[in-house]
Image (tube, rainbow, N blue to C red; front, side, top):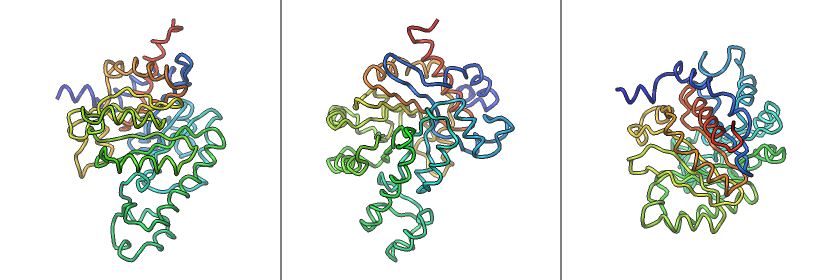
Length: 337
């Protein structure tokens, strides 16, 4: 299909495009009084670490890859923390392997946002503390857990983030709620409980069902987030599905604005039984990225810190688009020559 060839041209074509625009993304951009950091939602996906895709031949270890990534972008989103509770030593290694002004956004563990986790991925001591009926389950939800185990998961996760926060390298904790998280009073209370748990830790909320922004709920959703100064994760997502969240420009916090790009591959967005990376296998073209330049500038006029993250992390599609949108944004700045 001609359309597919434009948005899925393969790593070679995408790589050449990315190299042409590599310079602007290497440092944070100043947009008015705001700092805009642009990067990707992964640096370790196997399609990205494959030879010749993004990393140079001499970046063969985890340490070398992160060091190289941090030389190309000032921010990264850590996605692995969604699937398994991280170790504190891992966060310490991230600190050691990146420059002083590098920023990490961290995705909350699935059990922290009402999503299921595989029992085998829980730490051994927590597995052993589970009720017998849950040990036989392949996956568990937080609502099924004893309260003390749920509290322990939150406590351990937030403790891991402490080295990042104390060093100034923690951007935000991303609370990404699932498609079945609907705009109800109970859902809003759940968000407020999460806010109370994180305390003064910076965080942002991503909502993944369109009903939050339909005609009935749009104003209430925006007012709820703004009244509680909860940073909202704006998204560019595949259109036309039941859960598709529209590209709303909403800065609901005076501290932080976040934009995440999921690609526009509608046919796989809600499809089950496919590799996760296939949902995001989409390379934006320049006009699609250009739609967001005025929106990012608008966000930068209301928040001192703006994070722009490409979650279309198939091969080098995310890194290429991150470089391209940084170039577009830099070219649009008043001081650009």
